[in-house]
Length: 132
Image 1 (cartoon, rainbow, N blue to C red):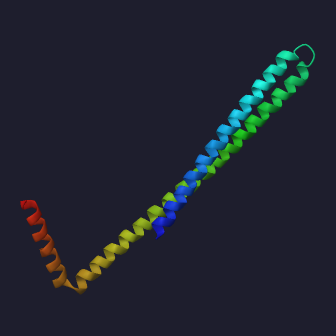
Image 2 (image 1 turned 120 degrees about the horizontal axis):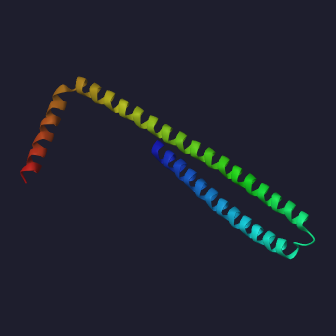
Image 3 (image 1 turned 30 degrees about the vertical axis):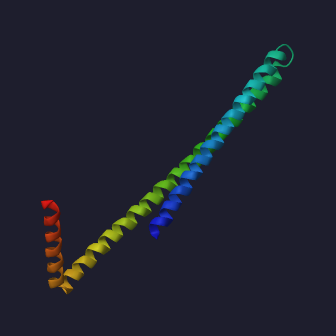
C-alpha cells in the first residue's frame, strides 16, 4: 500500500516536472517571438525611436531573466521533493527488510522442526529442478 502512494507521488512529481518543462518551452517560444517583434521594430524605427526600443529590449531581457530564475527555483523545488520521496521510499524498504528478518528469526525459534522440514522440502524441490 505504501509503495502505491510513493509511486503515485513520484508520478505526480514527474508530471509536475514535465508540466514545468512544457511551460518553460512555451515561455522560451514567447520570448523568441517578442525578440523577433522587437528586432523588426528596431529596424523600422531606428532613426527616431532608438531610445524606446532600447528600453523595450531591456524590459524583455529582464522578463527573460525573471522567467529563467522562476523556472530554476521551481525545478530545484521539484527535484528536492523527488529526492525526499526517494529517501522515504528507501527508508520504508529498509524498515520492511528489518521487520521481515525479525519475523523470520522469531518463526525459526518458535517452530524449529517446521523450519527444518521446510528447508528440506525446498532442497528436494531445487534438486529435482536441477536434474532436469
